[in-house]
Amino acid sequence: MNILIIGMGYVGVTTGLVFAELGWKVTGLDTDANKMKSLSEGRLSFYEPGLDSLLRKHLLTTNIQFTTDVEGAIHDNSIIFLCVGTPSDQDGSADLRAVRIVSERIGSTMKDYKLIVVKSTVPIGTNANVTQWVKASQTDSYPFDVVSNPEFLREGSALHDSLHPDRIIIGSTSEHATQVMKALYAQMNAPLLITKPKTAEMIKYASNAFLATKISYINELSRLCESLEVNVTEVAKGMGLDHRIGPHFLRAGIGYGGSCFPKDSKALLYTAKENNMELSILEKVTQVNETQSRHFLDVWEGQLGGFTQKTVAILGLSFKPDTDDLREAPSISILHQLMEKQAIVRVHDPVAKLPASLLAERVSQFDTVEETLQQCDAVILCSEWETYIRADWAHLRNVMNAGYIFDGRNMLNGEQLATLGYHYYGIGNR
Ligand code: UDX
Image (cartoon, rainbow, N blue to C red; front, side, top):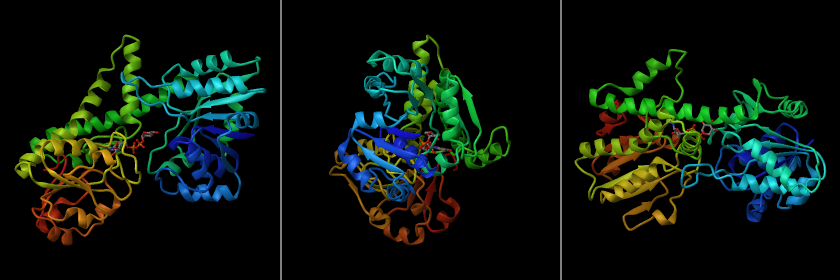
């Protein structure tokens, strides 16, 4: 069984490499010729720990290859994973154009049985649409199955999550397809849930929306903790010891970002609206997330005595550590707010680069933490990179002007920093 992965973005590349690691022969397909050339030469277009060495390993084992030849790739492979993007449209709905184009292309090209596996995050009911799109484009009625197999990997730990998943969800209506999927994942030690395609699609959205809910819950609580002078980190720790609640996704901060939580929450809200329903909790979850960084920036502004004409460092641009992904990153919203407040902003990230459109007279990026903090009045920590946790804060105090640290991820030890002469403020931990 040869596997074709269509869409060489984050999920596609990781999925392909994981199947290569499991010993399958994988072909990665994308219409972006430059990207395919880079991948063939062992270079990734994004940063993800461990993935580049796995890529180079399996170029040598020949378990993975890359192509732009759509027809050849569809002919040569019986299992086709759809890993194309489903970005948010203006109205919050998921844009399914890429899924449709690829489905139609498979339909018009196929000459024998194909198992089409939808890994892209798609609205509930899309698997049925894929079936129709393939069928409507066929030149002859060749048999095929469509299966939903959502992806739950996290950026920054994509490889670990994909090789050791908590569960494998398969939405299938065909016994043959189910058996093939089971064989593909046979080496993985994870519970397998076989269900209907629509249920599988819902599980993906419901999981992301639930995790986003946990974060917004603790984030909203952090605002109250802040004014009551209660430490939200300790509250979360106490809550998390109850195994029904669990410790995960209860870290208060400046809000969640990334390519999934904001987009998938909006798409699920859109689906509810389309069905004349309201998901009132999820609506609040997104509202809390959209206002969290502004809330704490206002609190911090009071503590600093205003941001106007102050020199402020932003440490950590990516939406979380160990990735260069800036999509929906809270740091960018904080940067805009600081610009509105007429601050001078100096930014740093171990891998992510600020887009040229955001570099301005009063905004510059530096290569080291020390350079970034030169003459700064305040530093705002936006993602918890190890570099910042391990930084020599005693030395950095001499580099800064006023020593205000605003820790948007509650990642540093405030008491220790106070002894070094800093004014330390986090999220709900006054
Ligand atoms: C998420 C899901 O975890 C994953 O299962 C799904 O496949 C894709 O979406 P990802 O967006 O890569 O993964 O990262 P994740 O680690 O979930 O973090 C998302 C955001 O939530 C980050 O901005 C992170 O800083 C924030 N977060 C996470 C918190 O603010 N508090 C927490 O306790 C956990």
